[in-house]
Amino acid sequence: MTVATVDDLLARERRDDRTALIDATGRSFDVHWLCTTSWKAGNFLRHAGVREGVTVGVVGEGPLALLAFLGTTLLEGRTRFDPPADLAGDDEFRALVAPVEDIESGRYDLPRGAQRVGYGDSPDEPGVHHFDAGLWSENPSFPPLSIDPDTEILTDGDRTVSHGDVLEAARAVVDEVGLETGDRVVIRESLTDPRVVTAGVIAPLLADGVVVLTGTDGPSAGSASCSGDVEGEPRGEYVVSSATDTQTGSIDPVEVSF
Image 1 (cartoon, rainbow, N blue to C red):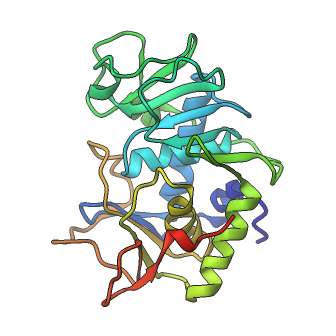
Image 2 (cartoon, rainbow, N blue to C red):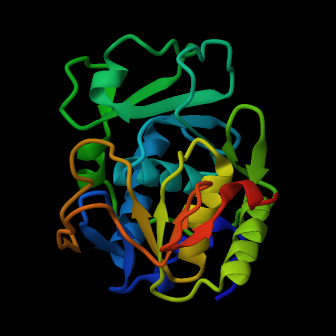
């Protein structure tokens, strides 16, 4: 199928039992789970006011953080991973998705009307939405989308990139390294950099490869279609890292160009 925007990577017809994601503990999640749970994340975040043109801050580097990014993407919002604590002056900032402990710590100063979405332990504060509970209870479907490739998808505060930018750069990564179906791409750099998200998440999804996360975001993102335990450091055919790796094919995010 033609992939014009990132939401096309989560289309219904792509669902199957191929592994799409491996977390830091070694558990694997299939494409069907990734698509369906991303739809549920989008449906849940819609209740928090996420929509086209707004920014969602996401704290964490594990499956739940990834789902928050993909759910925001389906709603045509832009994601900023690990945003700064002082966000009160950002009128486009709509929601913060973070571990409950961080959400309730008082660390983040959000603009008026911004929503707090916590994951992990059940929140004590009534104004905090529980992401985990939402993923279990939300509708596992999503209406057809027609997103403009110029729609913004990621920002780091200084640079903002669109669906079209990200896919063009991801295709260049796939072609340059010869990424193929089933190839595992290990992320060893922070998702705060849109180039890391492009090389470590979008490129393997585009090539029907496997995203391998080395960061965590607390409790499990769910148990459906996940299996296996891998001891030691996650391994793959490729690693997204600026450091030299003599045993694994390296994808340097610095070389990803938008």
